[in-house]
Structure formats: C-alpha cells, structure tokens
Length: 342
Image 1 (cartoon, rainbow, N blue to C red):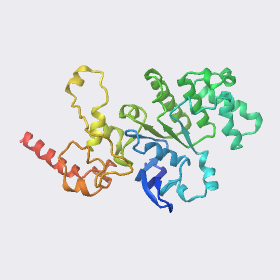
Image 2: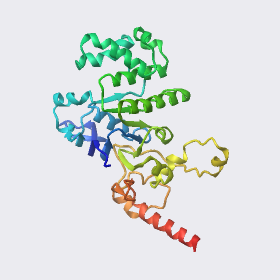
Image 3: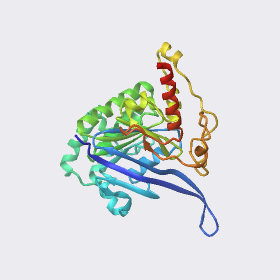
Image 4: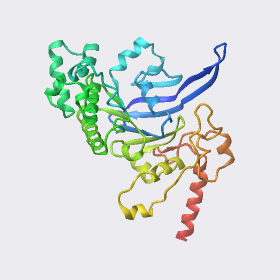
C-alpha cells in the first residue's frame, strides 16, 4: 500500500539579513535553512537531528507559520502554504501545532492550566462554550493530569507536568501534524522517557504525524520512523530509522552515532569514537563546496572543496545522502570485502 504524503517541502530556505548598508542593501545574510527537501507521510514520525544552529528549529517554525520562508515550497495536502497570504495561512494554523522546547517559558504564568488549554479552542471557535470544559477535562486525562489541576498555575507544576500541559494545548485544536521542538531536552532523563512514551501513545490514539526535533540520535531513535541529519542548514542524510542506525553513510552521521553513550561495557570497548575537530562554520559565511568539508575526517576529494553535493538516493530505498565521498568509499569497502572473502 502506497503511503499518503501529508506534507512535502521542496528547496525550502530561510535567510535572515544580519547587516545592511546605508541604502538598505544586505551586506551579511545568515542562511539558517538552505534548499532543504523531504516528505512527511501521514501518521509517521520524522526525526530531525543536528548540532545547535543547524536550522532544524527554523524548519519547524516555518511549517507552523512562525516564520515565512525566503524561498521554496511547503505543500500541505497539496496546498503550497508559502504562497498563501497571512490570512489564508491562518486557516491551516490549527492543523499544524508546536510543542515548545522550554516548558517554563512557553506557558503564560498569569493563566490557569484550564484557561491555557481552553484558549486555542475559544480563539478558533471550535466548540460551544458549554462543551469547552468537557474538552479540557478530556485533554488533561489524555496527557496524564487530573481534572483538579485545571485551576492551578504553571509555577505549581514540575517541568514534566508543564510539558504535558503544552502537549494538551497543542492537541486542543485537533491538529494533523505536531512539530515537537526538542520537547524533552529541558527535562530530567527519567522524565524524558515518560514524555516520549506519552507522545508515542498519543500518536496512535489520535492518528498524529510528528516532526520531532532533537540534538541527539539517541532520543529520536525511540519515536521516529525516519530520521534526517542536518548540518549548517542542509540535510546531509535522510533514511529509515533502522537503515540509518545500522548503515550510516555520511561521515557526519557516523560521528554523531559514535558520540551516543553505550551502557554495555563490552560494546563500549569495541566502539570506535570519531572526534570531530574544529568548530561549526558560521552560516553567514559557510564554506565553499560541501558544508562539512572543514570538519570531515576522511581524505577529501577536489569536488568536496568546490561543489556542494546533492542529496541522492544511494540505495533505491529512500536512503538519501549528500556526500561526494560515498561512491569512492563504497567502492573501496566493496574491494576490501572481496579481498577478505577471496
């Protein structure tokens, strides 16, 4: 059965003007997201990982209509949201919701929990006044909170409970897609597992689709169906979760996976640790050619320094990689394997 595409972005870019001259001409432009493309199928979870500043949160905010894209397309059920006026885009806001990173800053401290959850229902006129209270009670139960919590204020809750309130608020308008912007990074490790399990359960119960943004591959592993790895505003590798974790191809993906902690001491002793040198280049002045070439630990080709690699399917099974070295190293690995077998 062919999967149904809910949202597709094509060559999506977001550039911020950092400095202008006297006449208003841009002198410095920060390329937060640069020509990114991928699809999100209905009722799947896409993980988006990378270091701070790689552009993953900016993508999420463009999907949720917080930022307008500089160029490219955002096709939601076939409608290009990037071409709509601000008033037209508002009609789709209830279908794409955000769960924010910081549960302490994302809730209004002057409103009760019940009012926070009810507010989007009232603004969007989704239910008559008599039904709103029942809906709030239902949503509180869905995220593991009791009805008596509705009269409390955010400062009376822990970080994990606040994040549950944020999730309930996102569910209030019955969205199809939820952008989870590092929803567990500000929580204790023990609470992270609870929130991840809650998100997984809600995905099944409500038939939700997720774009799950995180720093590390170890977090998205438990919730994502497919994973994209970003670096300096571009996607470097995008594949099915199992394929990405068992057969990482891009050197940056391999470096990220090597940095994930392992509790088994035997496996830890066998694990090869890849340590990247240098700092992430500035998105205001990115390197020519491959954006990763200044930190790549492999022997680079001339094309790595001059030509930006395209994201291509290297397996025929939607395993996309942007790397000039892929073909050269895959041939070398095949020759090495043949020599061993021989």
